[in-house]
Image 1 (cartoon, rainbow, N blue to C red):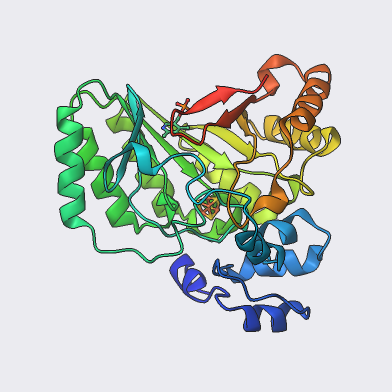
Image 2 (cartoon, rainbow, N blue to C red):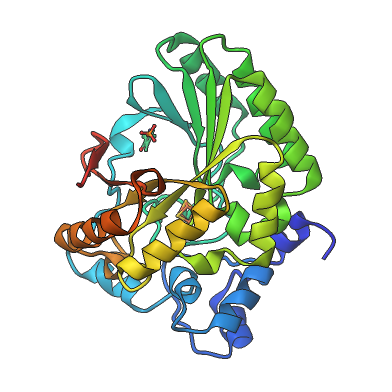
Length: 322
Ligand SMILES: *Cc1c(COP(=O)(O)O)cnc(C)c1O
Ligand code: SF4
């Protein structure tokens, strides 16, 4: 395929085609399916027991949990803290900016799975509202691109957001939270890398936080995309969601954090899973997470270990689990 947009557009987005490709029956579920082809090939290669398969291929358990009382539609209280349509302002000096509800992939465990199923609207008036809000919020010094996933935006759109933010004098830091690098690595083009490099000069500091849950996400193409990003001089961090049946043991997480450190990516957060309606089969009790984290403390030095945090459902934010 010629470019990442084409690959993105050709992603598997219905259960039947995906089922046919994987040669396995797949349940139709309420939360849509969306998987880029190159990633789908990896998933097929690694098979149903793999962490990749479990993260992205739908299961009947998803819909079953809608019938049960378990799980929340808005598990971290995003709705409570919305300052504008695109801004979540939970902590005094930093905001989440949500420029898109599109993602490179649909993760079955997503904490926003009950929000992002809807498509994007055109958002120029929304962005004016966002700029107005940020210009007046003088206590805010950091904008965190979240979503959806901002790396799915076109080069032009992303750069124009960054340029607009660079004109707000009190904005010093930019952060991206993204899963694109490991799910649609072709998106990390030389041009995109240059845009990020230019953008990093407009601010005091730019950080990129990669969402990576398992070592299987570090395959040849994603590793090379990571290498290209590192040429910008931007610091790479990682966040990992602890997930039942995927990475909930010390060996798996040790391998992941060790590998991330080898790639010069600093493990930043280990998130306790949220109680997401439709994803409760990924949930595990805090006591189990605490035991795993205690074991990891013995295996890894402090600088190689992420902070283990949990989000409160009332929108009050992250708290250390241990
Ligand atoms: C996690 C989060 C942030 C970022 O928090 P840091 O502690 O700076 O990593 C900001 N806003 C919201 C709403 C968050 O959930
Ligand atoms: S990339 Fe992030 S926001 Fe998008 S589906 Fe996955 S976890 Fe959810």
